[in-house]
Length: 549
Image (cartoon, rainbow, N blue to C red; front, side):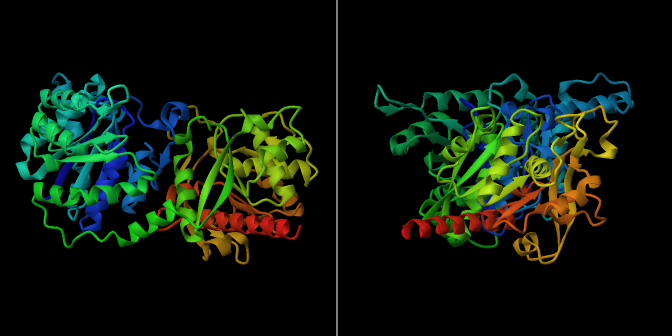
């Protein structure tokens, strides 16, 4: 029978519940247990697919096309598993399901209520992964939001009910709280944690473990005080102080015997002890790399780094085999537009950068800046990597500058353009709904032998995740190929462009998919790994030139 762990948060949001849940999954997986993680969000959107990056951050896409919370990216990276739509639930999905069932008459005329119908649907989704996979040992469910929020109450009530229905050793609650340091008093304060746990207890849930997020170690005195007032042993209170890298967190909690104590509480007998030697070696490289490179990221949402969370983590991963740390230089694409943006201004903006990445996005804001970034990297022979919209901007740049299509554009940005080198896919033409209607999830890609893409992957066929509506217009492929473009990756039927590159350039490659969604710390994505390698080589060339005077 599967065991269930519920991760909740209190005091304030953004404390790192996702990292805590992912870390627990990491430690239990390292002990040979089969673990699955879920994220339950209380907002009424069916999924985050229609939400602004400024509202929600990155939309993480799974193989089956589910658009999810970015915490699922942490789950996949920390446990090296592939998740599905069963691993993310929103209040919107819950109510959508219940209202559909009500209209179908499945409730046999009964009044539909939060209790039992909403809570029953939440409980059904909690146990669903274990029902589908009998080999699952532990299901970890993170509840979004903060204890005390109105919208979280049905989820917490469902947890309360499920814990009553299960044997006491089959469930446990992990509560994450803030322990603030008050500069004026020169000490940390435990009262917010006490109130948060009391709030959780008033709902009927006793926290079995508490993780105290803080700027510095909480100390034994505070640990004992929290344990006393929150009704649990002191060793069940964990110090969650700030760290330099999220990849330190499993090592921190393992040192406090979190995995031992959770296994004891759930009466789990894991196959073996956790072997974190490789994770520790990897973390040492992240924290103290022998060298560093600088990569410019030219984006539209750079004010909120969470909008590119998987990209930032992919660079951390890619630095490991290259023995470098990657300094990410964030550049607002709108800053690369305007009459005053000449070569001198671009030289200043990209000074000391050894690679340029143009990530995805939607809408026409800042597009010319992304096109300018592509042109600058292409002409200056700086390693360039385009992702999704980055590929489309590269195609527009090359179409205008090399293929003689002066008015080349995307029909997304200029519906009247005479040369729509990027256009809307045929099956997208008449779709009115926005959510879940793009080319989503894993699609196969055939890679042409002898190309840069083939050298990066080391194979001729791959599967990558997508999230977009617009594609390269096949009518312009001959003109773009004549300008020097090699379409090195396509759909197996060759109807959809997946990868383009410029063989005349040291490293100029762009993809229509999102490779960052499949990168892992122990298995960096090949395209990110080789892009960083190219940046290292570019830096070495610059150093050699300077050394020669």
